[in-house]
Length: 475
Image (cartoon, rainbow, N blue to C red):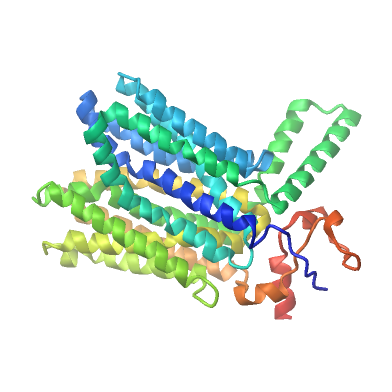
């Protein structure tokens, strides 16, 4: 039986306002993140600090943003995407404002590195989850483009940060970036909870009430029930999803390659005897290629396009082969720029298809927990890549071995992606979702004659039963 009534705020109306707010929020958040490289040089010059210690600021900011993903998922499940996004904007803004009045670089590691990294995580994850709730028919394309617009921040970050530093100095720049980050709160206010998110929250609250009543009857200890409530907010069963776990391991590999490029391509240019001005050029090549890769992949995985998991496997395979063969063309003067273009393009595409693949593997009902794990595994790759590459460089005195290492790892990631696709459910055609998907509303929203027996309470709160519609279609 097909239920034709769709939620009022899905794929139309306020959903388009939310789309604009999320896209703007991602650009704001990513711009201040990509400023880290320029800030790194400015902080060393201003504080005359140790280079290795200064690098902790940027690495902690990016790493904690990813590693805190599962905990942010629990916050989203307990409160809402809107609350988390507003809270993240406030904390990011405060981290920059406080840093503007700090004269000891060691405290910057705490404010910009630790506090800023946690705040970045709280603000970043809710944005993708919000789009998952608000869009159905074109969800893959909308979410993919939301990842693609992050590439625009690569064009904005460097020239903007250099202009601010030259005009207002380091402390003034911190305050301005703090004010810019505060606009994330406006984006968060616009992203009001959708009908789907409200239904899920009502269901969770009902479960908590039942657990409280049961606890009162059985006199169970309160701490254990609080812990159980936290675990219920985060779906532990995701670890039993073989396809999803293989995909997460594959995600680590391309993040290793991307972090190696972002950290070591500038120094590679210096070791080859090029002037420092070439650093700007090679990072521009990487940024342009990465942006192009994001946008093209976003357009490719739309309705009637390439399957997102197939695109993931293919891009990692090509990136691995090109990187492993780097010694064959490394003697050319343009080798670094060629590699930056290829690496940028083929690490941009996996960025874009992460969320569509996750939706396919786990479903929209677990998207917040799954997206948190997804970001966590990205953080593992970001933290692991640069130190391994640096150790190889110190041993061999050549970046060829470092790049080849990342290429070999990415090839392994491509194989893991193939294994994940074997275990994965078939991808539903977006063209057929409009006719075949079973849209479910809460009991009080159903029209007369639409009453249908649902298998369990979770089905009441689901945005759509994609898997069930696919099975009926295949039968």
